[in-house]
Length: 206
Image (tube, rainbow, N blue to C red; front, side, top):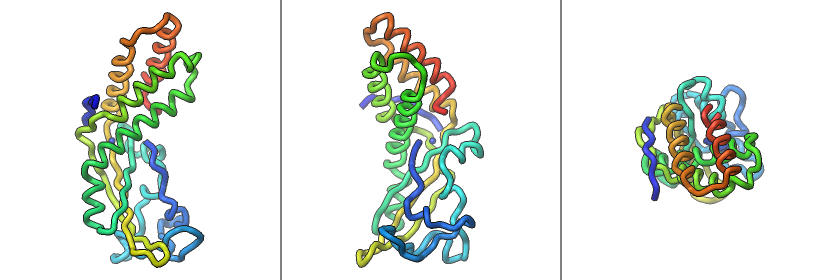
């Protein structure tokens, strides 16, 4: 697996169950439709509310962490401690790398770089490289868990964590991936298109 060095870190959607939350950040405990019943959550015992970041998109949160990219990672399991440990372990770097790859691909699709057919294989290789990148120095800034129950099934835990990585590190990794694939044979038109892509990502993933 090809690895890129990324040092101290796309797009995970807010959980469906949280769509029934009130504006104050309180979780409803009434079952509705196909959504699971909220049995418990991290701050409930102390009478606390759910932190704002749980309901916010990563793009909104990046205004708070203006020099960093923000990512959310989630996991589910029957044991709370085990789920939280898994969330903070090997899953986080892998999932964050996948999210970086998705954001890069989405930006490429929306960019004005000419004939995208000339760049299809090139960008496929770039995004594959990023999805397999080794994430080092990943910093978790917060985490949260919610206990859920669906019908008569056994309760389970859904955990999420908030991670950040300096933008300079991610942008550098993207630039290295673009340069690595640029060495592949190409026509003059393809070379020109690749240069346009590099210009687009010169401003980062945003």
